[in-house]
Image (cartoon, rainbow, N blue to C red; front, side):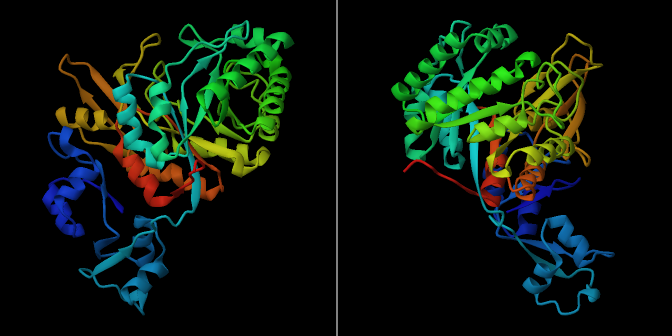
Length: 428
C-alpha cells in the first residue's frame, strides 16, 4: 500500500497506470462512488505491495526514501543499486512497502448505539480491525444507579469478529459531562458502593469483557477521591477477571487545575488501571475556531508527557474518525458541523475546492464558498494524517489506539491501520 496525493490533471486511469494496479481497485479502496470527481490535494490509498517511482532531476535515494516512508538502503537493495550517487532522471524505481512492519497493537473504538441495522453495518465495516468496542455510554446518576443502554444489537454483532466489549461508564447528563454528578458520587462512599455493584451486575448480565470509566469535568478538588474510587472499582472487578480502563483528558504536565483535566492524575491512574485511553483529539472542536481536530504535533506533546509517568504499554492513543465544517468568520456561540472524511471530500469536490495539507499539524484542510455566499473552513482526516499519528504508536511503543467515533465513513483509516499493524484479538 502507498499513499498518493492527487495532482492537477490527474485521472483515476492515469494514477492506476502509474502504479500498475486497476482503477477499480483504487476506486473501491477509497470508496470514490460518492464523489463527482477527484479533488486536487486529495490523498488516495493505492493497494499495491510496491510503488513505481520515476526519478526526477535532483532526486537522491535519501529524498525518495523520505517521501515514501522507507529507508534508502532498502530501495537500493530492492533495485540492485550499487552506486547510489549515480541516479539517472527517468529511471523507474521499485519502492518497497513497509506493510505491518510496525508490530502488533490493540485497537478500541467507541460507538453510539443507533438502529440494529446501522450498528450491524458499522461493525461489519470495522470489526476485523478492532480488539475492543465500547458502546457509549452507561450514565451514572448521583444516587449510583445506571441508565439503561440499547447495546444488544452491538453485543450481538461482534462475536464473529472476536471483539471484546467494554462497558463505558460516564457522568454524562443533560448533553454534557456533569461535574455535579461526578462530585456527588465521589463524595459519598455508599453511592460509590452502589454504583460499583451496578457496574459489576451489568458486566455479568451483558457479557462485557471489562469496564471503561470515563468521568470528565470532575472537580479538581476531588482528584484524590477520583483515584480512590478507581482503586475501589479495580479491587471489585479484578478478582472477577474483568479489565479496568480509564479515559483521560489530554494534558502535557501534572496540571492540578482546569475543568477537564485537573482531576485526571496520569501517574496514579496509570498505576491503577490495566490501560488508559488518552483522548488526544478536539483541539479543533465544534464550538471553537477552525483548526485541526488532532494536530500531530500537539498529540505528540501529550504522549511525551504520558509516557513519562505511565508505562507506554498501558496507553491507547485517541484517534478521531471525523472532521468539522466551520462557517467563517468564527463567532462564539456558533457551532461547526461534524462531518465524516468522506463528507469532506464530497464537499470539496462539489464546491471546486483544492485540499491543502498542513505540514505542522499533518492534517488536510480546505476553504469553500457555500451557495448562500458564506465562507467555510474544513479540517478533517485522511490517509496521510492517520499514518502520521499511527507512527507515534511505534515511536513511543504504545499499547495501541482508540477511535472516536464509529459510524462515520472513513475507509482509508482501516486500510492504513491494517497495512501498518497486526491487531490483537483477545476473544477466542
